Image 1 (cartoon, chains in turn green, yellow):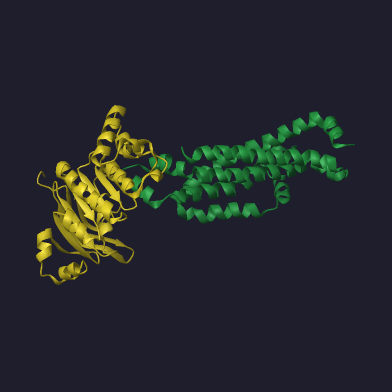
Image 2: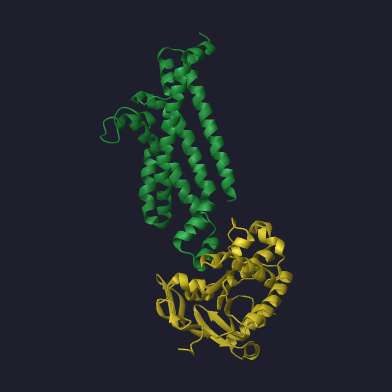
Length: 210
Length: 243
């Protein structure tokens, strides 16, 4: 079978898998960002928590994705077979780049700017909202980009715990030694990663000068 | 206490760990008066400044601003009544000049028209053309940035100004210009100013009183004339460093 025949035959499935993949990554990134960005901010206010939090996110990052998916299957509440485990795993992987970039982005705001803001009588909340977050936005967005691109790739493994996504084609292709089927999963995944990188890059550019 | 000066420090000591940055510091800044603190780097000048707007709190002694101890002030309210200008300027790089200048009035909830009128007035006062209003700090020269910094500090018309080597990073010609304008503006505004510099010429030009600091202590204070004539060996040492 040629690639175009494969494409014809699998078209309805392909669209469903792309949808699943997109959903897994999208939901995971939203959850990760809503945990990681506040955590990164908190670390700039409570520096003594930094070791523990960054230590945890670093450790998670070192677990091979296949193993992490495996660990999650027997877990109550957060684990099991299906998309829930996959999303949890993707969230865990996304935490490190997001937390770290939020933290460094805020930390690298010029100390003179922060001092001026404080001396002008801005409250901590105002400094965060009006000065630190806008100035850290490009760095935070860069963290989101790295996390998202990585997640698109990692999500292909999610098929092994029954979460669907483009990994389905890749593993079926591997099992049947059908490289066209592998490509059917790999090419859209690669395009999705590129698209996410490009799209978030556009947002990042717009944030440079708020 | 109506007789209380805008700024009064009484036996103020500030310690961090085992280091004493300021020791038994006492002086006043009166209405419409400019007091200039001079001294080497690390002599405690900047620390003294930061104790006044509650960026630091005294370990011992008290700092009284407008008749109230800084520890009794709400720090936010206190700081909005004190303009602050630093050498690094610290303009907000993502704000236009107009937004930078109008920040404190905006935080204080002034009406938009009043903010706008005030911004224009200040721009004129510090000698900048109206077209810089829509620019960002990185589109300005060093001298223009420092002028914007001064305008920002003056925005909500605070009775007190703290200035930490505000003209230190400027070239000599711009610096001389801006010093002259400073004197002219101060003539009309009559702020209570505490000014820190290591440039003795600047101190003699701008100050009504000059305080010499060394290792966290105020070792001498007097008028520029007294400074020029003082037989005190510390002073003559310092004077010689000018030549």
